[in-house]
Image (cartoon, rainbow, N blue to C red; front, side, top):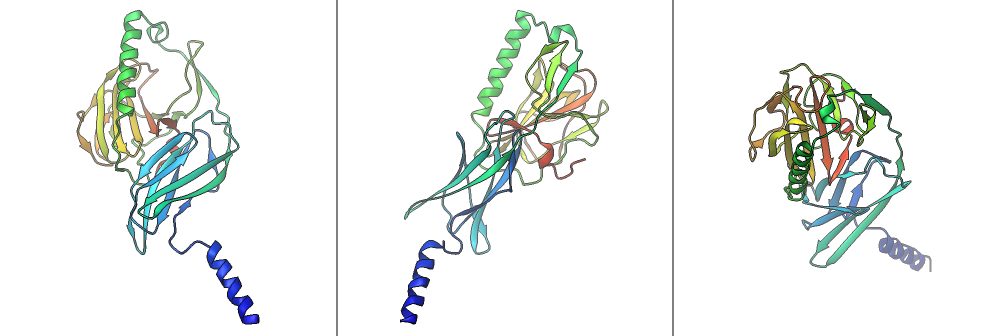
Length: 285
């Protein structure tokens, strides 16, 4: 009788506990509005996996890692994300069917400050010609963002593009000459004119031309929904379509476009969402 009870308990436990190596995801203890975080997916077979959260999703490739298959993705939350929790799911398609695993983590909410700046009037009170140029440039960027590389070229630690402190952090609500504008979509890094700027990760240069507001600009596609942006440069040293490596010098610090002085505006876009890049840098200072 005792033996039968033991066997029955073992059967029940095997039925409810997933097998070693089954689909699972590793997440941080919490998330924060305006930031991206790493998700690691573990699978027992090499099959397509999609990571989903909110109305976003990204397809990832899992590769052999010891006795299992593993893949990573960056999940992003917008600056104005207001929900208290976030559910992240991994969906795996196999010949035997579809496997899904979901987890929910709490979301911390950061309040971003205001910043008031004085700039040349032509960058606040725009002429029709300047507005038309800006709208055309914005349309080009949006089109590029819709045709990014699917394969991941970045690694988990992004390189800080120049040394030095931050003059304006991510998410600041900006006022130019007293007029409110969109929150700051990146970080402003202090740097003297001519300071070399390095690519934060491997990728492909998708845009490398002057823009009205951002001056000499570079956009690099790092694959799997990740794009880095470098603005206000004095010189661009790469061409559109060129493949670059992490740490490669791609330009020099300048003061082109809407600026108050020489610096580098660095931005990071993850799955269509601007995020604070600082937590993703290998060197935070």
